[in-house]
Image (cartoon, rainbow, N blue to C red):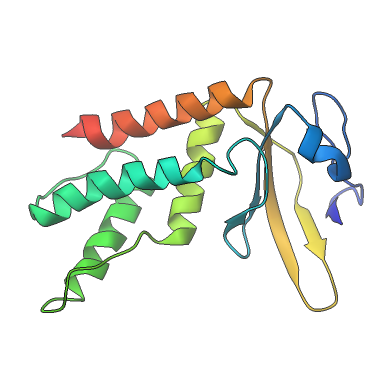
Length: 163
């Protein structure tokens, strides 16, 4: 069970007041991001976060293969780029393989969704059990699909169109 550590209350949708146990039916849920284990457990983005990853990986891959020198305007995107360059360089002589840093990528994804109009639940949402606990960022919007499309567009502008 998730709760807001500041208020001790269980979170609910800020638009329709559905409690957490009914969020699978909530038309406003954009995402439930587990910040501890770097996963996404629900919302409109659940089956679509790969689109964001694919977009960034394609833009980075092209630049890494061409050994391009590039600087991204957004700090989180630049940090992800620098981490990817470092990972690829550390494998010199081996088959060139790299992967996006999951923590930085999740932060980037959350920031783009917020910039596109998603609304984060206030406070610190946690889920604690005797053996594990997680901190969550939970996002809602009036129209989650539109927020996701806008966030994708932002990322296109920041990566592909920055060439």
